[in-house]
Amino acid sequence: MRVEKHWWNGDVRLARRDVYVRTDGDVWEVEAQMGGPQGKSKVQQCPGKASALILADAWRGPRWQWRQL
Image (cartoon, rainbow, N blue to C red; front, side, top):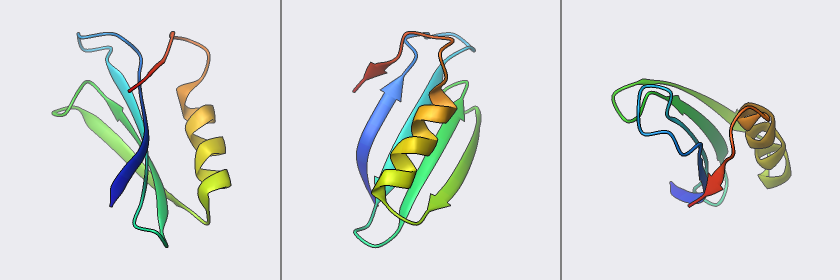
């Protein structure tokens, strides 16, 4: 799977949040990660790119100022 999009909330502490959109060309998935690489994460498969981007936007929410990496 390759990362198509990656957002980060800018926090380097335990409140760090990352959201990834990945694809292998057929399957699309969104991962929401909390607390950095050793933290918790949730992965949801999506039927296509549009739905993956909608889900990623919903999971980011308005709470932080997100940066696209």
